[in-house]
Length: 245
Image (cartoon, rainbow, N blue to C red; front, side, top):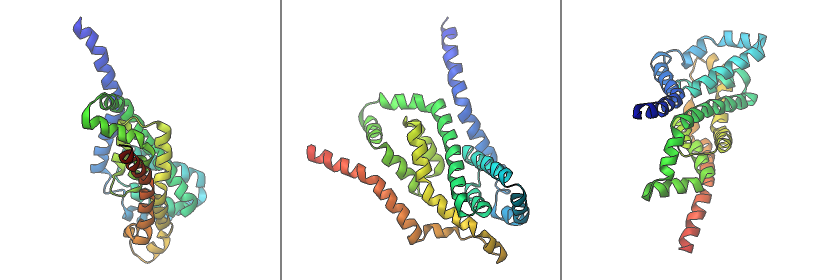
């Protein structure tokens, strides 16, 4: 009788974890199999065919590009930066930046939902019911969700994959996650898309794109400034809390 009552919940846990397990499985497989294909050289060698196909089939090109980009992000496959460059190369800085941001947001949301459905709800409940330091950290994040979400997206040191998973484990509402992802990745995506838009000249010169430009002070400075602005509400709350104490 005991085994019969425990089996359904166990099966339910496994079923809920399947989407996340599938994503992790595809991510590991893609890391070892696609790394040699999703490269700048591949884009360079196929640039003329891509441009010709785009000119003849703009809508189809957009659909294929969006689906591929969403899959790359959703399954954490290598090539996200290349996909962003390709978006600029095919569709210019605008509307290419919008296409890149939209596809990345949809893919990131897929990971978020898979993680929350599989593990996030249970882990969030455990953190909520915990005591001591863990509970204080969880409460602090809950009180400053918007700020924390934007900081994770704006600060380059936070890996994109982790920025997709952590909110799922902290019971962040879906609408907050989607909005903060779309707006938070926009500055960096616009920079990379603009680099991609200039790839034609880079190809003609036989050079490779200089992605280090992202870390130039005039580029990185404003992005870090936005991150600091996002952190301001947390600082204000901390100062007020000390005064009240």
